[in-house]
Image (tube, rainbow, N blue to C red; front, side, top):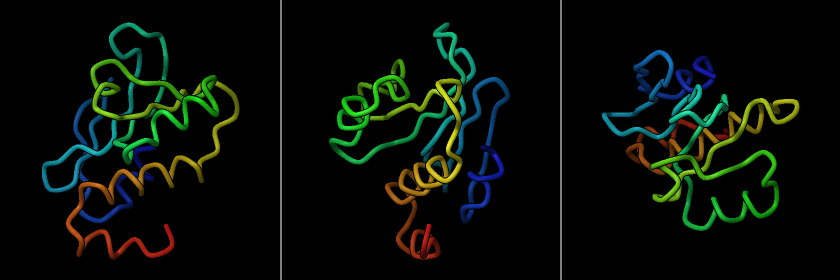
Amino acid sequence: MTELAEALPEVQSKGEQHVAYSVRGKNFAYFLDDHHGDGKIAIACKAAPGAQAELIEQEGERFYAPAYLGSRGWVALDLEAGKVDWTEVRTMLADAYRLLAPKKLSAQLAGQ
């Protein structure tokens, strides 16, 4: 996951058990390991309006609203709920990045 996130322009990561990924000081994703005692290993990403509800409705066994972040529209993907589709993870990270990165940086993501 870190490799995928840090492949995006100007991304920085911070933390160990819970790793925050940011662009120019704005967090767009987290790697979560037992976040607030939920027992899950997951990634949480900022999501476009309505995306969280749609993903949870369609695939509630894999996606959920993470504690504290979920109320702000973020969505989490449980990495232990079946085989991980790393292309899907890359897309989630890129989409979250685009929501917060400056337009000039987002433009560098052509095809991601």
